[in-house]
Amino acid sequence: MATDCLRELISLMSNQHSIRGGDELRFMEYQTDKSLLPYNTFGIDVKAAAFAEYRSVGELCALLEEYAVRFRGKPLLHIGSGSNLLFLGDYDGVVLRSQIRGVQVLSDDGEEVLVRVGAGEEHDWWVEHASRQGWHGLENLSLIPGQVGASAVQNIGAYGVEACDVIDSVEGISLETGVAARWSNSECGYSYRHSIFKDALKGKYAITHVLYRLHRTFVPRLGYGGLSKIMSYKGIDPAKATAMQVRDVIADVRRKKLPDPSERGNAGSFFMNPIVDECKFGLLREANPDMPYYAHGEGMYKVPAGWLIEQCGWKGRSLGRASVYERQALILVNDGGATGREVLELCEAVRSDVRGRFGIDLVPEVNVIAGDKGI
Image: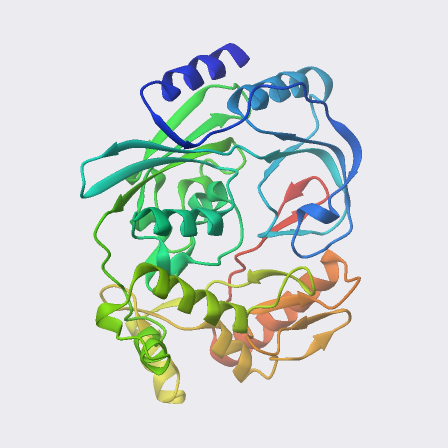
């Protein structure tokens, strides 16, 4: 298993220019009965039967070999920064956490840059780094929490841009066999907040690197969420905005809307914005003329989940030790000491009310982990 991984690593590292290198292979060991409190932004105090971090493909393969011998039969969960997880209880299995770093330029023709990024890099660090290097296309995804690998799995999006718009391909390692694989953008099955890694390949691969195709020329995308108006209000001409100005404005907006996980545990947006067909949209608009919406392809419309939740009176309300954030109803927060089941109870109460009033079933973005598996 490890031999296959290391051979692939050596092949991929050849003829590349490293901007930010990774780490050398080191000795690792599993920690047992490990607290996961620092590894989930909801701040749920649970433990894993075994836990280990890795900083390279070789280390991952070594850990997988040990898992096959020592923990065979126990479930295996791969995580990043834990910004999209809700643990309902202790995890009776093995947790592996990516810390693969590194930024490598694979090609640069003066117009397009192909860059390979370690899946363990923090996504927002990478967005800022790319902007400062003059590699453009990621700016609208500023300040979204999580790691690069998770951003490719979730196909994160904000302000009219999705990760799949700039992803060239994705690399990973089979958690069962240790064999390396690479998927082109089209093979990733990307759609709204979705990829093949969330269904057919869910739980089967650890993403190790993401390849991005970025542009040297900056073209601001300001048509979503009132960004142009916000920039004008700040005295910035939208037509002449720089990449860092766009990033700074978006980051400022997000800071004002989103709670700091270090102060109030949360996973950012808890629900996906529902997409409805023209018939359903017509009924909703007839009953709610002031309903905000966005066109989403031919005959389809995206309705803000936060608006639906707010109309049901949940904004700022609590249920036990969990609540709906008072500034943005799309976010559920841990008000202190909440269990995962308390957060899930709040989630289901909100979904029930939205379903009853609007006939829409909100779908959580957050991955719920129940003891030894996701649900």
